Image 1: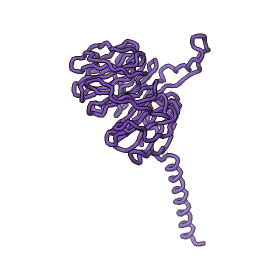
Image 2: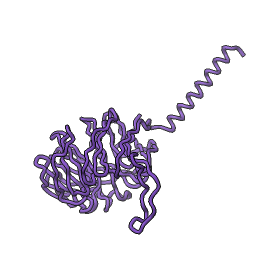
Image 3: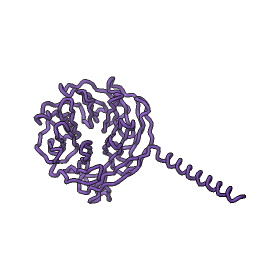
Image 4: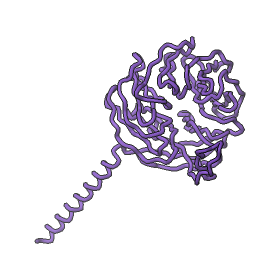
Length: 347
């Protein structure tokens, strides 16, 4: 065999092996998403929602009695917003230059300046244990969704006064707006979606999301008129115009957040079991699971950056669980001090 032929065959073999390697990578990682960076925040306490201010590029992470603030472009952490009361969620009113924090233990809302992140005042909620919170620009109102009293509070963002209460009829979870005056919220207790008018506060519609049970996170596709409710191991897709379930999609266990990326047609579910389910929207009524990505245990809440299409989840490292007691027969594992962190995923 000639030297040239040997070299040619060797090159062909290398190209073939490289091709097989690339095919294996593509097969193992069809969505292209993987861990990009880990931002260690530290501190103590549990956590709940995250919210990204797309204008300032600041990610607000609720953490015990504080809100941690991280620049998603630089990874630099700002001074925390401290001395709060069991915070759950953060909402933004960019047209007013204000942000709002739900204090679950304080039954109140903290109003802060989006430029300085300084708290300006406290608003007492009309319900107990305000959990998720949102701002609706159409009505100019902030809404808190109160877990203990199964209702929602409407606050006039112009005056910071409570203007009404909506009976949800069960524990409300996450909520979204259609931008035209209708608010949608998951009712965890009755496994349904409740739609109410942001101005009149009248409940307009309710519909079951069976076979989904106990929905938590909720996302909206305005173009196709679809809602995405995440339940344990299943995501339910609803048509919010006719109030009907159109399909379901298998996801991971213990989800608490879902995000729809209109720019890519992908839907993400962050699952407490330690996975991120990436779902492709094939059409308004058809969805395919692209991939299940390993994240970290209890990384159940999430935020999406519509500019970079990156996904952020938050978690911590855990040590052994304390010994069971009568009051706590199934104690949770203890958080390793200083290990609270944000994980960033992207292509």
